[in-house]
Length: 415
Ligand SMILES: [Zn+2]
Image 1 (spheres, protein in one colour):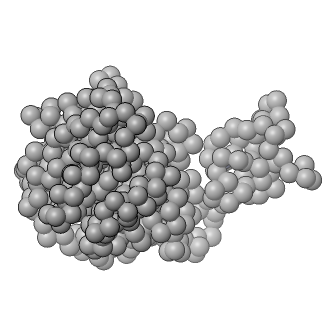
Image 2 (tube, helix red, strand yellow; image 1 turned 30 degrees about the horizontal axis):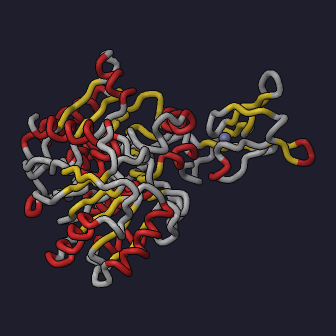
Image 3 (cartoon, helix red, strand yellow; image 1 turned 90 degrees about the horizontal axis):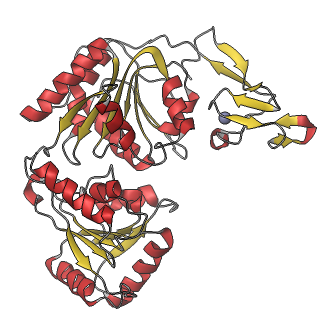
């Protein structure tokens, strides 16, 4: 995708036949079997990237060479905030990375202001007329990031692209998009920032890893951002294959809230657990807003219904990945609608609300791994004024994930 004014696109077949009845998709680089993925009339198709529109053996792909046709902007960065000295250090390191090109990881705790740390580097890149993509695995992260980037760089063209997005694609200097959307680009970006690089669905997904690699130009700057880098990144750091910047303090300088663990008796539900009910009643009295994390879509709806009976005075709603109202509900909660939002791990990261307590129900469920629990705990205490928000994990079993999450947070606080 690029400007339609460009007269010289590269055109190539969407699917290329290989040995033993296999074929490789030129959009997502996945290899499949012709015997399985065929349609009547002996046409075959790629099942992997079908979410972006079905590609068959009769289709062609078109790639326009990236020409960086952007109008110069004298002072692109309008952001008036100040970076803390720790943020400034990382921002300076990123500017250095951009000058030299290459890959770099920013390991920054939740709420440390990692977006703002990117601004000086992004400004350099904009002035240089680089084309920039800010990609994240999840839609919620993109929709939260987009207005912040627009506000920080008001004179720079900026687009937002995700699967069910309403905005029509336009050629812009900055693009905020989900990682899936990168499959539509080929050698397009000089700078690619991959936010939440340790999260589903990017993690361990070869198609999305290929998407990142083919979306950048041969000479590029690739910045990974994470609060909880996966083992893969940690190993690359140890083997000196990847440089990184570490920021273990939130921008307001206060500690991360350390989660409290509360045992739940076997078989207790949200309607029969006395401790949780007392806890929720107290929050209602104090009018303290909170997120209640639960392990599944079904339980988010069920628990929301149960709370309507148990605590009728609590204004609440639920949200999950398959909720068609998901984006609107998150926006409404941010504007102050409802005291509580019952949610699955869909809100574990990338979203920021002021003054929120956090409760995890069934924290011992296998859906809650160590990284997820650290991210969830990171939703609390994000503003300086309310840095002492409470985080409580309710579980029947004190799992290794719970123990490691609590230990990790304590260690990060001690620097
Ligand atoms: Zn494909």
